[in-house]
Image (cartoon, rainbow, N blue to C red; front, side, top):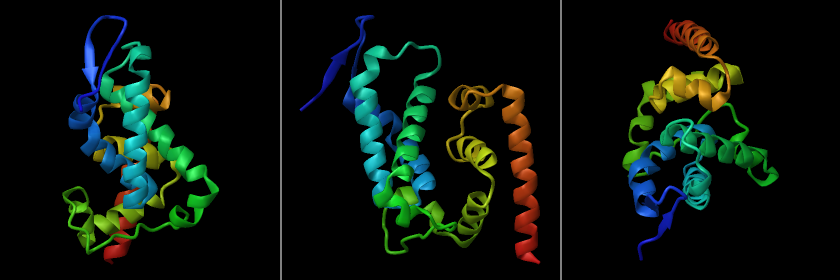
Length: 175
């Protein structure tokens, strides 16, 4: 069944378009935020549903990718606040399922990627958020600034500091 909805501008968008365009990048983002594959799947589904239901309210003040990424981040944050999920995601380290055959998590199963992700999780929240959006979702600084509602210069400084902290922490682990 094909779901189609229409915006006030008479252009139509369907749920398949949203899934095809954003599900992979949303899965990466939600997986990194939530540290649990199954929670990430739920968060992606909820994000796509929210975007589908509220697309007619999308004001096109930013790109569609920025808008849907912001929905995903807010969805992940609400998952993190839920009491039932706290035990799953409270650890500072990501637990990876080596039995998983999913292509989405293939990159994250290498030792180097695990070390990097764990170092990212140890960053303060203001640095962690920008580094995840820049490096894992490949968003531009202007898109990140719209998502987190900060000036572009602030985002640039946070990225620079996050990279410096990561470089120092990863060097210490090697030594």
